[in-house]
Length: 270
Image (cartoon, rainbow, N blue to C red; front, side):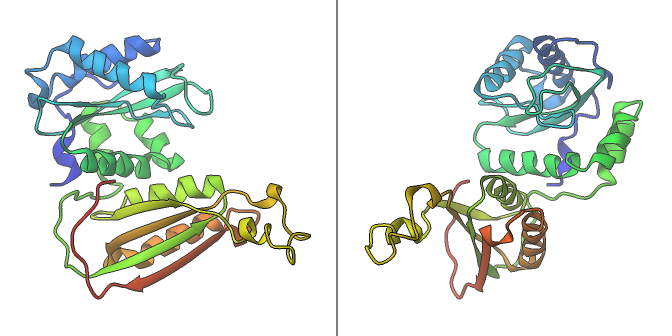
C-alpha cells in the first residue's frame, strides 16, 4: 500500500488557528476525525492519546517541523494529516524554535513496525529544507499533499525478491549513530539489531603492556548496528551512510562492512 493511501485529504483546512501546544493537539484531533478511518473515534480520546505521546518526549524536531503521532487499539488503518501555523507555535522542539509544519499520524497499535517506517518516510521528506519551504507555501490540504507526493513514491508493503545482505556498521560517534540508525528505519523490510559495544581499548587498558596508551577517558562511545535488508537497497544505504560520515570531523569513527546472505529466514521487530 502506498503512503498516499493514508493521507487525510478530506480534512477541511490547512492553516491552524491554535497558538499553544495543547490547543494545536486538539485541533489535530478534530481534523483527524474527518477521515473515515477515525469517524467512530471520540475527539477527546484522540486528544488524550496525542497528549500522552507528547509526555514521553516532544515530537517537535528542529527547523520548525513536528510529527505528532499516537496509536489506537480500535482502528485498522493509518491516518496522515497536516496543519500549518503561519507564525509558529512553541512545541518544545529540539532546537527550541517555533514549529510551523505539523504532520500527524494516527496509527493502529498492532502495526508498530509500519508506524515506524511511515514516521521515517515522512521525516525523509521533511528534513530537506527546500521541500519544507515549498510545502509551507501551499494554500490547501489538496495542494499540500499533491506537492508532497512529488517528492517521491513510498510503498510500505511492496513485495521484493528474497535476496538479502547483512550490513554491519561500527559507530564511535553519538550523533552519527542517531543519523545512521534513522537511515535503516527508512528501508523497507529491514531488520535491525543494536549491540552496545566497547573499543578494544577497554580491554587493552587492563593489560600492563598497553596500559600507558589507554585510560578510562578514551574508552568512549561504541555501538554496532547489524541490519539485514534486501540487496537492492545496499548500495544506496552505503552511499547515504557515507554522506553522514563525511560530515564528521574524524571519519575514522564509522566503519561499514557488508556481505551477501546465503540463507535468510524469519524476522525481528524494530
